[in-house]
Length: 164
Image (cartoon, rainbow, N blue to C red; front, side, top):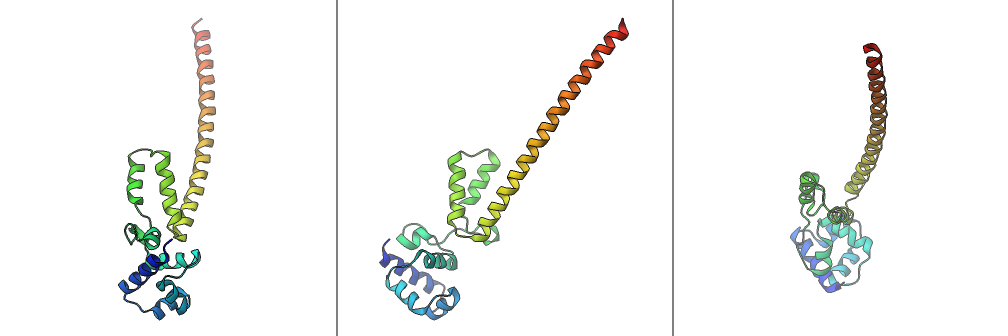
């Protein structure tokens, strides 16, 4: 990580938002001296880096390297999900390759959006429950089909006896 690039990018984001260092310190809950050090290019902890990423809604990779786009594209409900809409469309068309699904999950987890991550976990848990219910229903249907076949066999035997 190049601390100089990080500092330059932090300063640029703050200036683009048109807020002062003291205002930023108050809004994200860190000291003014920390903000001054970070913008000057001194090291930063992962926890504080995440505060900046969340506050600015910026791309972590861009913040650290200056490579790529500064801002994460926003999906509905203001969730930070870069390129997720395309992946959802791929799901609608057909089953994506495993790599695409893993990439999508990684993107969600890397977004740092706790609400979205908790929502994903809830949906996965609900999906697991739905799969279990479908398995139970499939077993019940299989049992009913088996019983139906038995009844058909008995009816066929009864028809033969009645014809004799």
